[in-house]
Image (tube, rainbow, N blue to C red; front, side, top):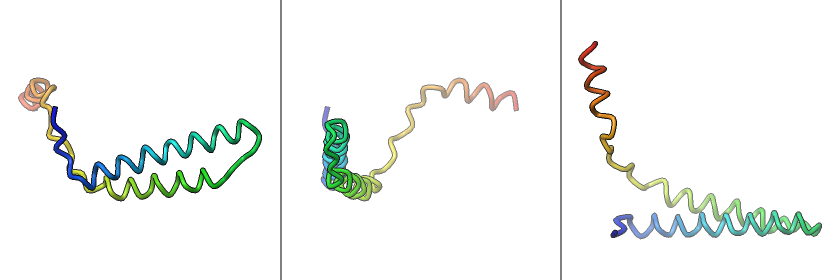
Length: 77
């Protein structure tokens, strides 16, 4: 299985994963009783940057799984 995504989209995915990890660190610091908001701000920044990079990804082609239902519905109309 080969990944056809452009490099910038993969970088965006990496930033989003790192933002999720920073958010998990923020939650664990909150549970530990020593809240560190730097993790929260880093998570928000990384997820935003990742979203900006990933929004250029083209949508996947339609799978056509329910094409027969769509044809039947159009015939009735």
